[in-house]
Figure 1: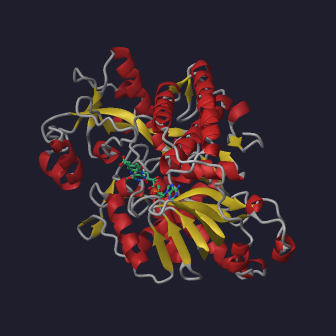
Figure 2 (figure 1 turned 120 degrees about the horizontal axis):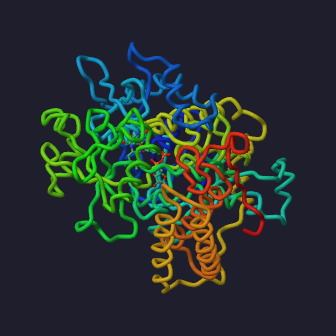
Figure 3 (figure 1 turned 180 degrees about the vertical axis):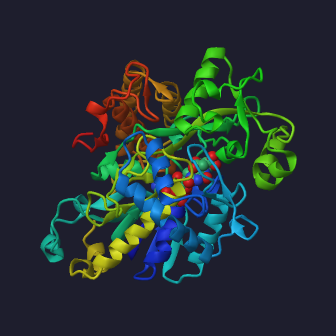
Length: 552
Ligand code: FAD
Ligand code: SIN
């Protein structure tokens, strides 16, 4: 297949960009499962933006920078904040139904925000945004969405045929150019090459590398791993955000490897819920004056400390200050889901634990979404343009995805008429090798794949979680390296399958997180090291950048 533009991923970043790029060319969107299945679809709280009279851009910028603990790129932060209202308007124009009160958008509050500024659609914001974007895309003849197409690896210079004059014909400088992607068509079980003039990675997050995560099964970090293998720079991979409040389930917990724990939105604390230990005592005042509404790194660490100190498996979230009517009106989905588990949140406290939630690090881009590989862009959770620094402020990620998707569109639009981009995609297509799986066989070794998957998730949970130290990280690195080498060997001999591809990507992502964490010998934001408990601005007020060495 070929198209002017190829977008990998059908979450908020990919779809909002598809709608815009369709104005200047034809767009293929590929997505690994059903098109709505994405982190976006599960977003609850909403989208942060300055929309009320008592708020202003400077305050939102200040809150974001404070949360980011010195590592935010101020230009990127200013960009998302100032463009927020325009991007929200675009969502409204395509028919997104946000929640209103007295004719105005109702604005919620979340941790670290000094004003009410979260635009939402009850507690199902992501589902509503995803619905509206997919509906709009379905009406656009220039957009084709292919479900169950799993992107394996980016097509780069090394996939070009060398026997022809392709290099000089294409008149391109042959270092680091992207031509599209090899993707597994899951329904036919064939690997296809999809060639494009511009390729955009919008594959979302990596929460599934941890045992306990709010992320759905698709979030296996494929885009990070794919980018790394192709030679992209990745930055700040050590900053994995743990959401403080996911529903604790022991007896009823499903035993699947790729399970997703249910989130209890921070908006619930924004509406007045407070955290308590099992004996009913409040504890957040001991950690931060903002108490239960402190930024996430502080709240998650406080919960972790209290649980370890007391030997408890969870803490409670007490919603009694909110009141039954408001609970049912504002959080109908959380109310319903908890009731299904036997918890009536209008009366009972909710048992909660922190869970891996969001990757602040990712493929390094500039503030126009450009990566270090030509014709390759990245946006959304997989990208790192510098907005979140060492800790993301709540509800800034949907906003970031919209703003940088728009930036990529504008960037491509300006440059798209250049001579080089006029090279027909058909010419590029002919120059790329087909997928070659000679010498590989189907596998029966499912146990190897599922065992390693379980083990890497356990290793990450136990050694690379909220509180870290060098000893644990080194131990995690040794185990990861061993599993990675074993899996790479196996990969070379085996026909690809989704399970194997995901395992390979999970191991790569684990490796990137661990190595980045070992490189940062200080504690900052989401990265807390017991053996380096202080922030060290002299040595570490900078991004951790990592790029593939040739042999690994
Ligand atoms: P996604 O929405 O995850 O989309 C990624 C897409 O890429 C998916 O379609 C996926 O199938 C596809 N894909 C991945 N790998 C491949 C591959 N190999 N081949 C083909 N396709 C692939 N943020 C907020 O700002 N506000 C919130 O209220 C909020 N609540 C959240 C609640 C939950 C439970 C979770 C998990 C996250 C929440 N977040 C929230 C974070 C936010 O939802 C995500 O950061 C954001 O949706 C990411 O959007 P995206 O488009 O980058 O990725
Ligand atoms: C939530 O609703 O608590 C999630 C918000 C976010 O991750 O930004």
